[in-house]
Amino acid sequence: MSATHPALTQKGAATRERIVHAAADLVLQRGAQGTSLDDIRAATGTSKSQLFHYFPGGKGDLISAIGALQAERVLDAQRPYLDELDTWASWDRWRDAVLAHYGSQRHWGCPIGALTAELVRSEPDRAPEAVAHMERWRSHLEVGVTRMTQTGRLRAHTNPRALSLAIFAALQGGLTLSAMTESIEPLQAALDGALATLRASATTRD
Image (tube, rainbow, N blue to C red; front, side, top):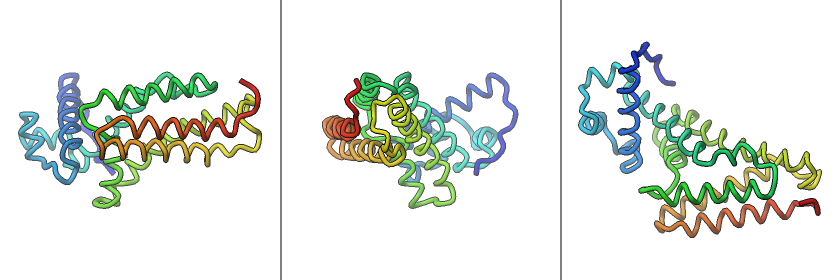
């Protein structure tokens, strides 16, 4: 768990935010294990005492902040569609937003998925924080499937959790392949397949 943060002035909060953003870029390039506090100090022009002032728990506290930042970035890129997902058109717009976001990034792949996979292997005690970000993302999809079922667009026996897991698994798999191939094509194919799976449970209602 992250340590309690000291009360910060407006300037201090801005400095902390700047450190988190810079560190997030480094971790995205090198991984959490491949990024040291010295690397972060050099990239941000901060002293050791400054770093521990803003992140009393050290590197683990900073990694937690990076996870929260990346989660918000990813979710915000999918809004407002991620918060709707109550019509076929809203699902299509969500798909387009995901492709637009990841297609515009300098680094391929999903920063949250990559961080979660790394922490599960290297820091299992801290991994639940990252897993919670992934679950929060998936839960938006489950809420969307539930809405579609309640409005009669999906068959009544549809299992929202199982279907959202299938869609989310396809999304993450597509992101992994896109990172490996440095191409948006696998992600596009994965999302198209996921939405085809969703439509397989459709009723005749538009």
